[in-house]
Image 1: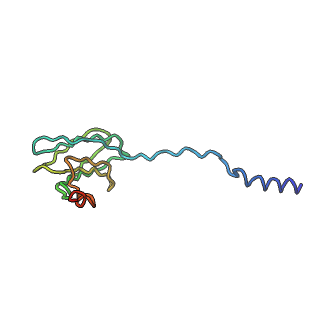
Image 2: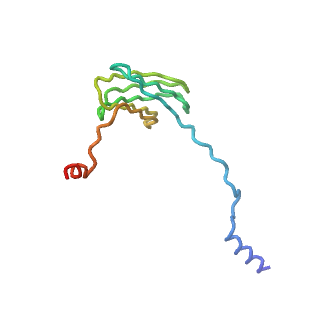
Image 3: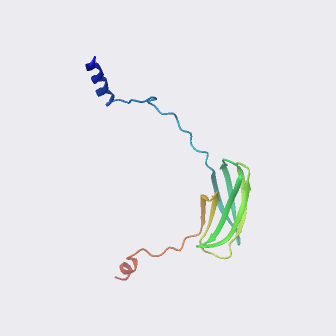
Length: 129
C-alpha cells in the first residue's frame, strides 16, 4: 500500500493535477472600431468616418492638427454603427492629421500631406563629405 501511495505522488509531478485540462474560451472584449478617409475639397477637408463597432453609445472626439498645433476639436455623439462626416478647414498646404478618440483612447489617426521630419543623424556629414 505505501508503494502505491509513493508511486501516485511521484507520478502527479509529471501530469496536470487540476481540472479542466483545457481552459474555457475567453471572449474578446467588445472594442470600438472606426475606419475612415480624408478628402480634400478646396480649403476644406472632409472626414468620412465609418463606425463599425461600438460597445455603448457615446461621444467620439475629433482633434484636427496642423503639424503639432491643435486647430479644432469636435465631439460627435454616436448611437451605434454607421457613417458620419465632419468638415475641417485647411488654411494652407502642409501636414495635417485627424485623431479620433473614444473615452480618451485613440481609435484612428488619418494623415494628409507629408510630415516635416528632421534629418537623420549623420546625413549632413555624409552629404557634405
